[in-house]
Length: 427
View 1 (cartoon, rainbow, N blue to C red):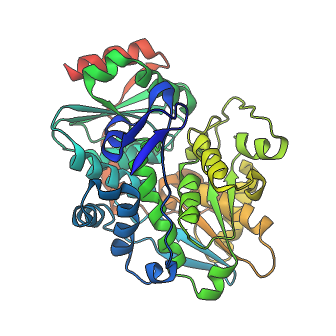
View 2 (cartoon, helix red, strand yellow; view 1 turned 60 degrees about the vertical axis):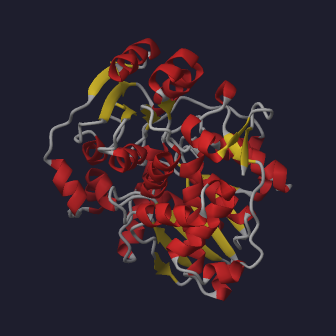
View 3 (tube, helix red, strand yellow; view 1 turned 90 degrees about the vertical axis):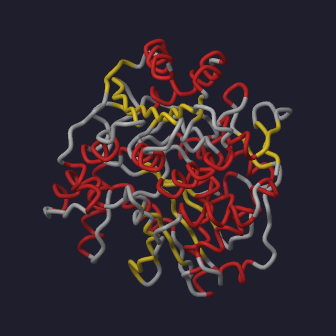
């Protein structure tokens, strides 16, 4: 399987190169030259999670890695379930928070770690990534203690939940965290600048674990198939999936699953007030605004990195962007929805509540709805406790890290300062 740079199509790389390199020239994202199409999806859906995911990922990777190696990687990475929970007769929640850092990013982060280990030439690697909350923890725990790999995670100071911060800023060792005086978009911009710096890239063996890395994105395709496998045949026929969206990697993976043959009637992109994409789909004008802090901080992104991949896929498949549903939800509406869901018997958190609300607004009679729960409610304990007037207990991983000291450095959104840190770290 070859992948190409969607900005400069003449740059074509193998899966191994794409995993090691992260970004292409001119900050271009890599995209599969061919999206596999599965003829007998029903038999695929009858398989267990690991076997099915191994077959899907082998089809995307091609013959570069043997099938038994891919299955070994998947077995290590997907060592936890992705169950459905019935919220109402016509809506299910896909719970993606049963991994070690209690968020959907565990699937992609752990598979990327396995992929990088499989294709590494043994040289030193520096992984630089930006996080708006959950990526940092998933990547930090996936790569913690791995030899010859330094991980540097940038996050906007004061703009992620305290428990999210504790989960990845207390590890130390080969995990280095930097609290940036700025927004997630500022952090992401510095990651892109680093990739544009050829000297720096070469000197430190630069890579990224954001969803710009194709291995993370491919892993996320698998849990869409897992979700549909748990539905009845009738529910599959008119399936609508709402995805809480910030950087849009999750929705990209869902659309790739559909392109590969997964029966999904349509997708809905659900955002908070950082609504660049919903406005774009309505007006046709791409006009990012300043990022606004919200209750759903992992979606506080005004310039979503993965959107070009969605446009690329839609162009390839002949899908109109107007086929994609979208909606934006403010904090008051988020709180109201969380309360209503809790009254109806389901404990959620802000990101899932946004997806649920937009789904309910746009679901038609006869359709079956699925929304993604991307994190455990306890990761947003402060806001969930306050909104619902309850005391959400801390699961084991959060309870362990909640009492540990933060080990983060702090800096301004200044690339020169970051560059010095990275060069010193690499020695």
